[in-house]
Image (tube, rainbow over all chains, first blue to last red; front, side, top):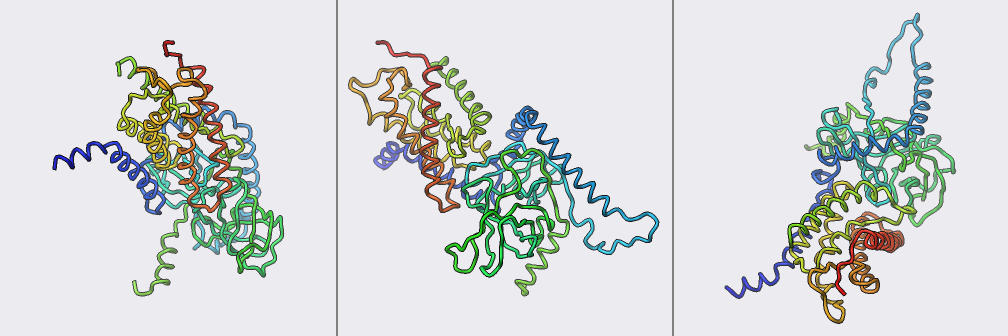
Length: 277
Length: 173
């Protein structure tokens, strides 16, 4: 017995090494599962505070480009508002009232961001207290950014579009052909459009927008433009490279969107797939 | 370890950590070359520090860095590996005449040739594990190799500069 303890004692460094290494790997793999814990990321209180004060300082350097982008967004919104405001003296019926107020929007500020790894995450300065919940879509005036993965009281952590596991349902605006956007891990300004059949005519320069099928993003939010089309190794699908609209290296202010009808939509779809439940 | 040394190393732990997460995190050359300067904190601890302490220090250092990088344990896993190998590697490359007591393995104490032999393989293993785990979602090997080697060069270069400027020579010749 003593021999065994002596043996274990001599191996203590190796045993501790194994324990710590397994613990670290455990954290890595639990986090990569969809239900993973979010304790060790930058949306916890301590890290969030520090990052947000750093961002307070650094954001002054990008004020000009941020203001310019916001002004452009304002202008385009004013244009749309003008078109959609009903004429005052005519009888007005909101015909699609079932769909109105379907989506709610928030604005938030990016306080932490990375673009160079294969699994990039973004931290925002809004959390549960502000109404942010898991699964909300994130975009800015240039294009979509990602999806909320976890929230703490005042911060939330977002899976960036530059994460090799995130798929976003999108379509080609001109032809209404849909596919999924996925980042291939190479270039932070490019992504792939998957599952577009070979017979579809796709031309460089065509706009890609969100399809609205997965109920995370409303329909029609810009994603990017087709850059290159080729017949890849896949037998059934085209190999389409798109250049992303959003410049991930300069994220500052973003919008969050929540679909109030998402749960209803999801549960209906689940019922259809598994009628017995 | 004396109290003065303990304070000194705690201070340098905080400094390495803050510089890593607030400055070097945003500094990535050409989109490939990362600088994980914080590994030099582990590398410059005295060689009398037992592996057990190194492992624990490495684990928590990695975990703190992970919180800011949003990399969830990847830094911790690779830093623990480095901490585990460090003492054995120091023993393996013992120079003629052995090590002096109370002389930490830094650039000015040990000389450039020994220091390169000491640091580069350990940094290489650390970076290899880090970028390999990070790239598990993809099937790309060329970017992985470029990242590992360019980051190794960047980390070592900056580390050596920091060593030359901020670490005193303690060896009595």
